[in-house]
Length: 440
Ligand code: PMP
Image (cartoon, rainbow, N blue to C red; front, side, top):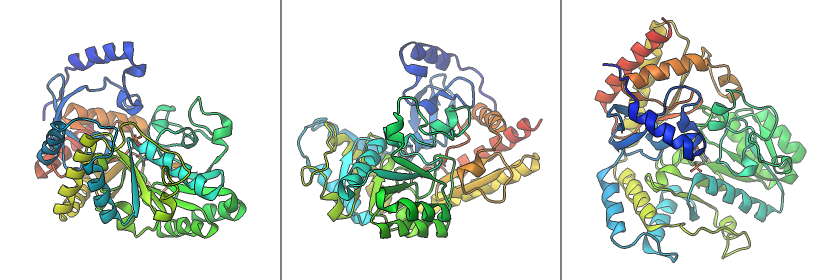
């Protein structure tokens, strides 16, 4: 595979973008801050591939950070959007596809009610307001390195771009963003992921004050972290104290199974949040769960939540087409898991051959290769000492060879249905050369 050097068009666009947009991007991790180099501006995407404005083609492992489970520009999704487009783009009134998608989501997930919003951030923010409205309690609990969008009270010891951009360090002090008043942050209590004893202790001391515990059922935003059965059991115990248990399935929903991590791991959350796949690549989020809780949401109940573009017909069409396609292809999840497992094994082999310590966490179609030798990585604290410089060099080695990996050590990559043996082999070949280069 030849290396791709010229980035003239991306550089020109990045320079124009920086003059008119903070940091030149509309979401921080896209800026390549932790890996260096110029972010590639994408001209088009098809199947498993991205093509940038300089004409380079990449095997894509970002998949728009999760939504593109069918691959880019899937014909069923494209046709559904095109069909919806002919009937108008927004009505500000209820329309049939919202009902259809809500029926499908409730059927697939067992949630009794669902409300559509426009992003994962809105979904988690609304679910927490609902939990506070239902319980009359103020405090919420989240876990170190988990990311639930950028609502004020959730930017406390948060994962994703906050890990990447804060000079690689997780701030011990809350909050993790400027502009979040300490008073807001003080209502968010933080516990360590995969530490059941810590959660039990917190609940024993303060359970009566806590409205909700929100968690990533498989973490993607500190790199992939897989929950232990003991931790999952502790999470479910919080319900005994009248706490609303919220599974943030924005990343895992419809990805780890048709019923997300909830289905795969046998969870019983009170509420769930969705995003990404549920919109098929258009902006959608949702929250849902038990009817007796969801019926507190306006106009049925006293917890206010609204959205001008919520239930947008194009977005509903894309989400419906995506979920129907997944429902019609039950073997797909095994296919994704097989690819991911082979990728993990190949990466481990070639890192070993290059003399580089590497720990690969993967589940379903999510994977992180941590540049650290560890028997088991289960918390952000364990992942944090990863060699981010080696990761950055490896990332650039991949990019130059036509593989677009997530541009941060502490993120998951996402495999799609369009990834085949051809892409797997090309990726492993590029990865092997890039590992050798890192250690040379
Ligand atoms: N929750 C989780 C688990 C996420 O991964 C994300 C986004 N990566 C969000 C919430 C926020 O979603 P959005 O970016 O659509 O606001």
